Length: 219
Image (tube, rainbow, N blue to C red; front, side, top):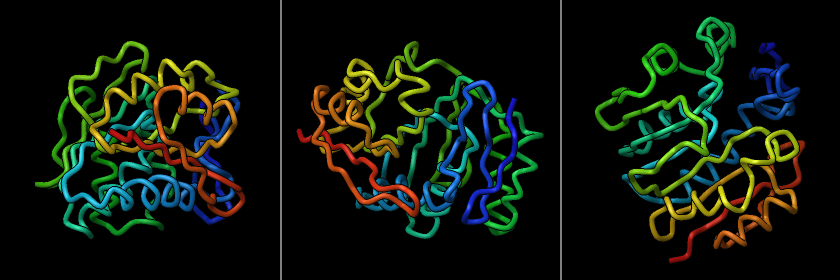
């Protein structure tokens, strides 16, 4: 069961009673997503055409922010996201994101959630979304990515997802010079990323958080 929570920057997130954890930082859901995934991921890539993979679709906040940036910067994006525990559309409709997005952006956000899973969704002529309801361990990668948003619940909550073996699977799914961004900078996360072959950079975090991670495939 999920409970709606207002975060410090005025944006909303969810609290999962199943995992006893918030979907985003309570210091600011919007600020966290913009800082970790857009600023240190999407904008850092400096590419006009990208394949993006997200582990943890959740509320769709990272996806809609990526869509908005794609319109602003004229990017062509293929965005695949997996989520084993989809949030029900009736909960999404109560997140009050109408205060964050323009009318057209809000309609796209709801289209993301109301469209079927496991099928391509054309959100614009340059943005294709595919949501996949599957466990990461069962996923077989059939394409290569330029950017990975790693947004699972925390390492203490879902330690299996933050393992060296899973990071190696992600490393192999990246194109040369591809990157992975995540909000967690715990020691075990950095070690497992390095052991999987990534070059790891610890970066300043958003408000209320000291550091985040950007990891690069350097070949």
